[in-house]
Length: 590
Image (cartoon, rainbow, N blue to C red; front, side, top):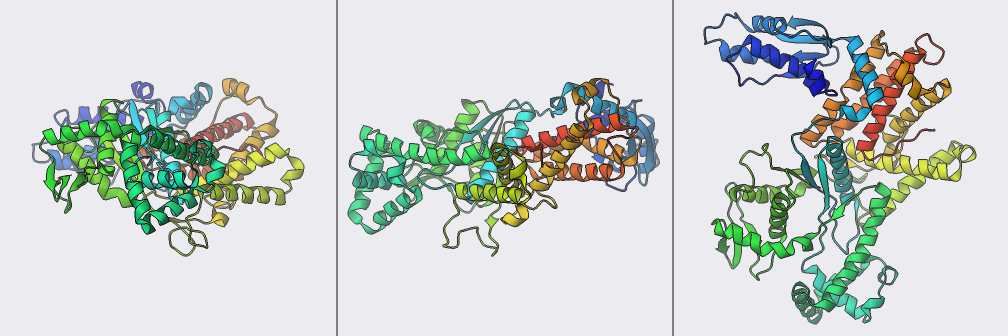
């Protein structure tokens, strides 16, 4: 079947392909009609449903059609559906809904093929070749805090899903490494350490404190403030001594950031604000030549329809700001890096800023008018991380929580729970440490990702490290249990993949098999809408469907042992791919 060749993994796409052909046969003159296929809701007849009949009827009813209403259109769509081995049966319900039941044999055969050819054959195909994901982006000389956790985790998962979908992803860390704060930081460094060459991370100590001390002096000491302002000019003018001090501060910060990225296993390429600095003047000139920039109270701004304030691109003192840097970075990504999709992962509080600079890019002709046409840009906004008191998550002394401390606490708690279960007696110290790390860090990631990113959530170690309910711990343990069943069988699973036959005769087996086949369309939907929680929902439901199967069907020693071991293996493979896309390390023993 042609559809299966074109969309080997995406079940929904394959069903859509069949109905595309049916629509062309049923209403050949209505070429602009989009096929509407959805997965059937639980408890409803069928596996998929085509919902075109009512919409189609509203288009053709005044055109002398042969049809007498939506049900007749539905019947025609069913009649014109091409013959396919994937379809078991079809029926028309209500006002023309066409319900499709897929062949259990075909579902089983598709899973068998994946077991031999690998799960990468189920990767979705997206309409872009290269994308930029701009995420994490902490500020130099400031600690990474829980707000950066969300950007880092969400951005990494979006990048992983796009990479799995065969998109080249430029993972960009747009760090705040340029600006007026560096004047005070450099001058304070000179005061505390006249011999800046010998300054080490240990000497500066806590960067957050260093930043606060320099800010206090900047606010309280007019002479220091003047020195700091002159230092900015010298830094931006390329003064070698000031550049060297700036590099020192940046390097110490990067070492701190690296501790977080190493724990989270996140890879990023830094292209901070300073990288785009040489290009800003040229970009501002281009915007000016297009008549977009106006003078306002000494500053240079762009007025945009629908906003009650203009977008400032040059400050009244001639300096550049976030907008000028962000516009330049966008110009660079479109023109130099040739990105077709640029995704920015920041908190929802920056929504207006992104809306304004995206609109500016459209006015400049850099982007198409439609926000769904490529090249395209998207702001992936996320809500707050809250404490038990419902307020922004902080320490008892009202300090922002350091991300390194948070992650280490998760690992420590995870290890304690494993020791309480006697695992320190069963496992090597390395196994204990690795499992504690996988479960602890995985718990923090999953607790964030399972929520719709635009909402806020409450950070609670006890809930996220629970082995019950929709948590990483529960899911990781479910995966480990499946692996244990396969090990206990004593069968060579790789050999079984080549020689065994999968049969889905029982309702629980079929439901699990169908859910496995819906993996590709789930990843595609999560990518298209930039919503990682969609994948989390799929993974949790997969685990639940496996439990429903395993609780009523014996695997080892049953007449269907070979088939059921293949179903266990397929479930474990899909779970591991979900874990990979979520940046979670699977565990194989519990």
